[in-house]
Image (cartoon, rainbow, N blue to C red; front, side):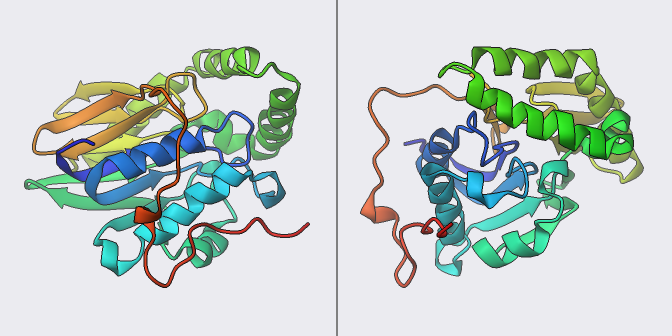
Length: 257
Protein backbone atom coordinates (compact mmCIF):
# COMPACT_ATOMS: atom_id res chain seq x y z
CA UNK A 1 0.00 0.00 0.00
CA UNK A 2 1.43 3.39 -1.05
CA UNK A 3 1.65 5.63 2.02
CA UNK A 4 1.40 8.88 0.04
CA UNK A 5 -1.89 10.73 -0.17
CA UNK A 6 -1.91 12.18 -3.68
CA UNK A 7 -3.91 15.20 -4.67
CA UNK A 8 -4.91 13.59 -7.98
CA UNK A 9 -4.71 10.20 -9.68
CA UNK A 10 -5.20 10.14 -13.47
CA UNK A 11 -6.00 7.12 -15.65
CA UNK A 12 -7.18 7.07 -19.24
CA UNK A 13 -8.01 4.76 -22.11
CA UNK A 14 -9.27 1.70 -20.28
CA UNK A 15 -11.49 0.75 -23.24
CA UNK A 16 -13.90 -1.31 -21.15
CA UNK A 17 -15.55 -3.84 -23.44
CA UNK A 18 -12.36 -4.58 -25.36
CA UNK A 19 -10.62 -7.92 -24.87
CA UNK A 20 -7.35 -6.06 -24.25
CA UNK A 21 -8.73 -3.90 -21.45
CA UNK A 22 -6.80 -4.42 -18.22
CA UNK A 23 -9.65 -3.34 -15.96
CA UNK A 24 -8.65 -5.77 -13.22
CA UNK A 25 -5.18 -4.22 -12.98
CA UNK A 26 -6.57 -0.69 -13.08
CA UNK A 27 -8.92 -1.60 -10.23
CA UNK A 28 -5.96 -2.86 -8.23
CA UNK A 29 -4.30 0.57 -8.58
CA UNK A 30 -7.47 2.37 -7.48
CA UNK A 31 -7.62 0.22 -4.35
CA UNK A 32 -3.91 0.42 -3.50
CA UNK A 33 -3.35 4.18 -3.77
CA UNK A 34 -4.71 7.01 -1.62
CA UNK A 35 -5.89 10.16 -3.41
CA UNK A 36 -8.28 13.08 -3.02
CA UNK A 37 -9.31 13.22 -6.66
CA UNK A 38 -9.61 10.61 -9.41
CA UNK A 39 -9.72 11.73 -13.05
CA UNK A 40 -10.78 9.20 -15.68
CA UNK A 41 -9.37 11.06 -18.65
CA UNK A 42 -11.40 9.67 -21.51
CA UNK A 43 -12.05 6.47 -23.49
CA UNK A 44 -13.20 4.57 -20.46
CA UNK A 45 -15.33 2.52 -22.85
CA UNK A 46 -14.36 0.93 -26.15
CA UNK A 47 -17.72 1.75 -27.74
CA UNK A 48 -21.41 2.10 -26.91
CA UNK A 49 -22.09 -1.65 -26.80
CA UNK A 50 -22.43 -2.54 -23.12
CA UNK A 51 -22.93 -6.21 -24.06
CA UNK A 52 -19.15 -6.39 -24.56
CA UNK A 53 -18.46 -5.60 -20.90
CA UNK A 54 -17.00 -8.49 -18.93
CA UNK A 55 -17.29 -9.24 -15.23
CA UNK A 56 -14.05 -7.40 -14.38
CA UNK A 57 -15.27 -4.38 -16.35
CA UNK A 58 -18.46 -4.22 -14.29
CA UNK A 59 -16.38 -4.59 -11.12
CA UNK A 60 -14.33 -1.58 -12.14
CA UNK A 61 -17.50 0.47 -12.71
CA UNK A 62 -18.89 -0.72 -9.41
CA UNK A 63 -15.81 0.51 -7.58
CA UNK A 64 -16.06 3.90 -9.32
CA UNK A 65 -19.63 4.11 -8.08
CA UNK A 66 -18.50 3.42 -4.52
CA UNK A 67 -15.75 6.03 -4.76
CA UNK A 68 -18.34 8.63 -5.78
CA UNK A 69 -20.14 8.11 -2.47
CA UNK A 70 -19.59 11.26 -0.32
CA UNK A 71 -18.44 9.01 2.54
CA UNK A 72 -15.29 8.25 0.58
CA UNK A 73 -14.37 11.96 0.31
CA UNK A 74 -12.89 11.42 -3.13
CA UNK A 75 -13.79 13.68 -6.04
CA UNK A 76 -14.36 11.49 -9.09
CA UNK A 77 -14.19 13.19 -12.48
CA UNK A 78 -14.90 11.67 -15.88
CA UNK A 79 -13.54 13.53 -18.92
CA UNK A 80 -15.26 12.46 -22.11
CA UNK A 81 -13.13 10.79 -24.80
CA UNK A 82 -13.92 10.13 -28.45
CA UNK A 83 -14.90 6.51 -27.68
CA UNK A 84 -17.16 7.70 -24.84
CA UNK A 85 -19.19 10.01 -27.08
CA UNK A 86 -22.89 9.44 -26.49
CA UNK A 87 -22.40 7.94 -23.04
CA UNK A 88 -22.43 11.13 -20.96
CA UNK A 89 -25.95 10.77 -19.57
CA UNK A 90 -25.72 6.98 -19.20
CA UNK A 91 -22.38 7.11 -17.43
CA UNK A 92 -23.44 9.88 -15.08
CA UNK A 93 -26.56 7.96 -14.07
CA UNK A 94 -24.79 4.60 -13.87
CA UNK A 95 -21.93 5.54 -11.56
CA UNK A 96 -23.10 8.86 -10.13
CA UNK A 97 -20.31 11.08 -11.44
CA UNK A 98 -20.33 14.21 -13.54
CA UNK A 99 -18.84 14.20 -17.04
CA UNK A 100 -16.78 17.03 -18.52
CA UNK A 101 -15.39 17.90 -21.93
CA UNK A 102 -12.34 19.15 -20.04
CA UNK A 103 -11.66 19.65 -16.36
CA UNK A 104 -9.66 22.43 -14.68
CA UNK A 105 -8.41 22.58 -11.10
CA UNK A 106 -5.90 24.50 -9.00
CA UNK A 107 -3.13 22.87 -7.00
CA UNK A 108 -0.23 24.61 -5.26
CA UNK A 109 -1.18 27.83 -7.02
CA UNK A 110 -0.92 26.26 -10.49
CA UNK A 111 -3.72 25.76 -12.99
CA UNK A 112 -4.11 22.18 -14.26
CA UNK A 113 -6.20 20.98 -17.21
CA UNK A 114 -7.32 17.42 -18.01
CA UNK A 115 -8.62 16.89 -21.54
CA UNK A 116 -8.69 13.61 -23.43
CA UNK A 117 -6.68 14.87 -26.41
CA UNK A 118 -8.68 13.70 -29.43
CA UNK A 119 -9.53 17.36 -29.98
CA UNK A 120 -5.95 17.84 -31.19
CA UNK A 121 -6.05 14.81 -33.53
CA UNK A 122 -7.16 16.29 -36.87
CA UNK A 123 -7.38 12.90 -38.61
CA UNK A 124 -9.68 11.52 -35.93
CA UNK A 125 -11.85 14.64 -35.80
CA UNK A 126 -12.30 14.72 -39.59
CA UNK A 127 -12.86 10.97 -40.08
CA UNK A 128 -15.24 9.97 -37.32
CA UNK A 129 -17.20 7.35 -39.31
CA UNK A 130 -14.05 5.81 -40.80
CA UNK A 131 -12.46 5.57 -37.36
CA UNK A 132 -15.54 3.88 -35.91
CA UNK A 133 -15.83 1.28 -38.67
CA UNK A 134 -12.15 0.44 -39.06
CA UNK A 135 -10.48 1.86 -35.97
CA UNK A 136 -13.03 0.56 -33.46
CA UNK A 137 -15.21 -2.28 -34.78
CA UNK A 138 -12.50 -3.99 -36.84
CA UNK A 139 -9.94 -3.53 -34.07
CA UNK A 140 -12.30 -5.07 -31.50
CA UNK A 141 -12.80 -8.07 -33.79
CA UNK A 142 -9.04 -8.44 -34.31
CA UNK A 143 -8.60 -8.68 -30.55
CA UNK A 144 -10.88 -11.73 -30.51
CA UNK A 145 -8.83 -13.42 -33.24
CA UNK A 146 -5.49 -12.56 -31.67
CA UNK A 147 -3.56 -14.72 -29.22
CA UNK A 148 -4.18 -14.57 -25.49
CA UNK A 149 -1.23 -12.17 -25.03
CA UNK A 150 -2.62 -9.85 -27.76
CA UNK A 151 0.84 -9.36 -29.27
CA UNK A 152 -0.46 -8.49 -32.75
CA UNK A 153 -3.17 -6.05 -31.72
CA UNK A 154 -0.86 -4.24 -29.28
CA UNK A 155 1.74 -3.96 -32.02
CA UNK A 156 -0.86 -2.53 -34.40
CA UNK A 157 -1.95 -0.05 -31.72
CA UNK A 158 1.61 1.26 -31.30
CA UNK A 159 2.12 1.30 -35.08
CA UNK A 160 -1.03 3.37 -35.54
CA UNK A 161 0.20 5.94 -33.01
CA UNK A 162 3.56 6.29 -34.79
CA UNK A 163 2.03 6.34 -38.30
CA UNK A 164 -0.38 9.15 -37.45
CA UNK A 165 2.27 10.95 -35.37
CA UNK A 166 -0.35 11.13 -32.63
CA UNK A 167 2.04 11.77 -29.77
CA UNK A 168 3.56 14.89 -31.31
CA UNK A 169 0.23 16.21 -32.67
CA UNK A 170 -1.61 15.86 -29.39
CA UNK A 171 1.36 17.20 -27.42
CA UNK A 172 1.73 20.38 -29.49
CA UNK A 173 -2.03 20.99 -29.60
CA UNK A 174 -2.39 20.46 -25.86
CA UNK A 175 0.48 22.81 -25.01
CA UNK A 176 -1.05 25.54 -27.19
CA UNK A 177 -4.42 24.93 -25.50
CA UNK A 178 -2.86 25.18 -22.03
CA UNK A 179 -1.01 28.36 -22.93
CA UNK A 180 -4.23 29.93 -24.24
CA UNK A 181 -5.99 29.11 -20.96
CA UNK A 182 -3.01 30.16 -18.82
CA UNK A 183 -2.49 26.67 -17.40
CA UNK A 184 0.88 25.38 -16.21
CA UNK A 185 0.14 21.68 -16.60
CA UNK A 186 -2.07 19.79 -19.04
CA UNK A 187 -2.90 16.08 -19.04
CA UNK A 188 -4.11 14.01 -21.99
CA UNK A 189 -4.72 10.42 -23.06
CA UNK A 190 -5.83 9.29 -26.55
CA UNK A 191 -2.39 8.41 -27.96
CA UNK A 192 -1.94 5.31 -25.73
CA UNK A 193 1.71 6.38 -25.24
CA UNK A 194 2.85 7.74 -21.87
CA UNK A 195 4.84 10.93 -22.34
CA UNK A 196 6.12 14.06 -20.60
CA UNK A 197 7.23 17.26 -22.34
CA UNK A 198 7.94 20.82 -21.23
CA UNK A 199 7.65 23.72 -23.68
CA UNK A 200 7.37 27.48 -23.10
CA UNK A 201 6.62 27.07 -19.40
CA UNK A 202 3.88 24.45 -19.97
CA UNK A 203 4.24 20.86 -18.78
CA UNK A 204 2.43 18.26 -20.90
CA UNK A 205 1.72 14.76 -19.62
CA UNK A 206 0.11 11.77 -21.30
CA UNK A 207 -1.19 8.94 -19.12
CA UNK A 208 -0.82 6.17 -21.71
CA UNK A 209 -3.45 3.42 -21.74
CA UNK A 210 -4.72 0.30 -20.00
CA UNK A 211 -4.78 -1.90 -23.10
CA UNK A 212 -0.98 -1.96 -23.40
CA UNK A 213 1.40 -4.57 -22.02
CA UNK A 214 2.88 -1.79 -19.87
CA UNK A 215 -0.04 0.36 -18.72
CA UNK A 216 0.64 3.69 -17.03
CA UNK A 217 -1.00 6.19 -14.71
CA UNK A 218 -0.19 9.65 -13.35
CA UNK A 219 -0.09 11.02 -9.83
CA UNK A 220 -0.07 14.69 -8.82
CA UNK A 221 1.02 15.51 -5.30
CA UNK A 222 3.60 17.11 -3.04
CA UNK A 223 6.31 15.18 -4.90
CA UNK A 224 5.24 16.79 -8.18
CA UNK A 225 3.80 15.02 -11.21
CA UNK A 226 4.92 11.44 -11.79
CA UNK A 227 4.17 8.97 -14.58
CA UNK A 228 4.12 5.43 -13.18
CA UNK A 229 4.37 2.18 -15.11
CA UNK A 230 2.17 -0.53 -13.68
CA UNK A 231 4.05 -3.58 -12.42
CA UNK A 232 1.90 -6.67 -12.23
CA UNK A 233 2.16 -8.26 -8.77
CA UNK A 234 2.34 -11.97 -8.17
CA UNK A 235 -0.83 -13.74 -7.17
CA UNK A 236 -4.43 -13.30 -8.19
CA UNK A 237 -6.51 -10.22 -7.44
CA UNK A 238 -9.03 -10.84 -4.68
CA UNK A 239 -12.04 -8.63 -4.00
CA UNK A 240 -12.14 -7.45 -0.40
CA UNK A 241 -15.28 -6.89 1.61
CA UNK A 242 -13.46 -3.98 3.25
CA UNK A 243 -14.13 -2.00 0.08
CA UNK A 244 -17.87 -2.14 0.63
CA UNK A 245 -19.78 1.05 1.37
CA UNK A 246 -22.85 0.63 3.53
CA UNK A 247 -26.02 0.65 1.47
CA UNK A 248 -24.29 0.00 -1.88
CA UNK A 249 -23.81 -3.25 -3.79
CA UNK A 250 -20.38 -4.83 -4.10
CA UNK A 251 -20.52 -4.57 -7.88
CA UNK A 252 -22.89 -4.04 -10.76
CA UNK A 253 -24.72 -7.09 -11.96
CA UNK A 254 -24.22 -7.79 -15.63
CA UNK A 255 -27.51 -6.90 -17.39
CA UNK A 256 -29.50 -9.77 -18.83
CA UNK A 257 -29.22 -10.12 -22.60
